[in-house]
Image (cartoon, rainbow, N blue to C red; front, side, top):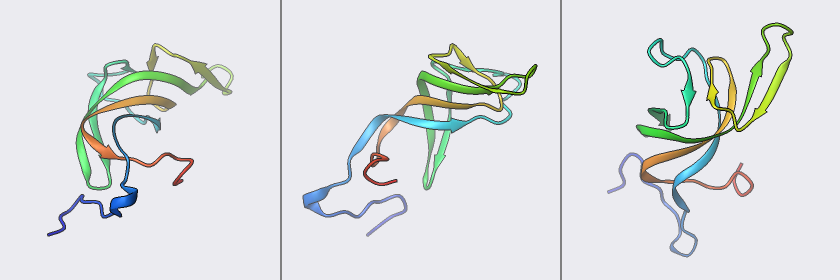
Length: 106
């Protein structure tokens, strides 16, 4: 009776679920129709057996390479993210996902 995507955990210590979480992401080559990623960006997230539409709720920080100097620059609360950047974002899902805090289960 166990199906793909199910989680087995003890009743006394159930796995926490959430529909809003923070994640560190790396963008590679973004679509030509959506050249930048900004607040409200909609895309598909694949994580283990989960694949569904998500929305980027907030952009917390971004690390980009400066094309002129080649140095990595960090910006807090950016307005958008470009291709080939690392970013910390807040993600909203349609259904609750089981997520452990990184401090508890790295």
